[in-house]
Length: 229
Image 1 (spheres, helix red, strand yellow):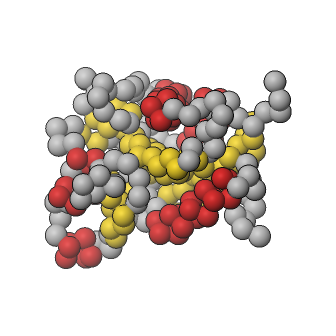
Image 2 (cartoon, rainbow, N blue to C red):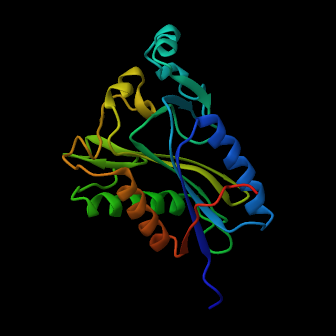
């Protein structure tokens, strides 16, 4: 077996959504060209609603008026990823893997299931029993998977990934009342905090990074240097 693939984990704190989107696009091109290793960006966003690429992207699932969104300082962005509308905000850990899935992971369904596995293992370490719901994407908890703990929406272009997952840690869940989250009306949204876990975001970041490296068989490198020289 050759040298182990590296994963550079960059923990960036609070990043405006538009900046994170531009950064992902830049890193995807650099990864495709072979100029950088695989990267996992871990961020939080200011309040924002993001739209998927299917149909109207989920605009029909915005329940709040434009005026209310403006009053609450909530932006709307077209994300360019799969899935429907979702909310991002402080207290939610968002992960953007920039991976080249070639040569041995060129399977979209496997990639999504692997992201779910990372999150299932992560929350299990914090005492939360969660899993999958047949026919739906993400990580769910409660009787029959009645509440969504983490959302997943990805983009894969020529087998280089972007976008990713959002895990509700201490998120203000009231913001989800402004939308039909991911277009699914009959299930609730929850968070680690609502489920009784009390801790720090950096603890969650460390555990996510560890399980991500394990599931994707990468050698983790923590990188606190600027993203661009």
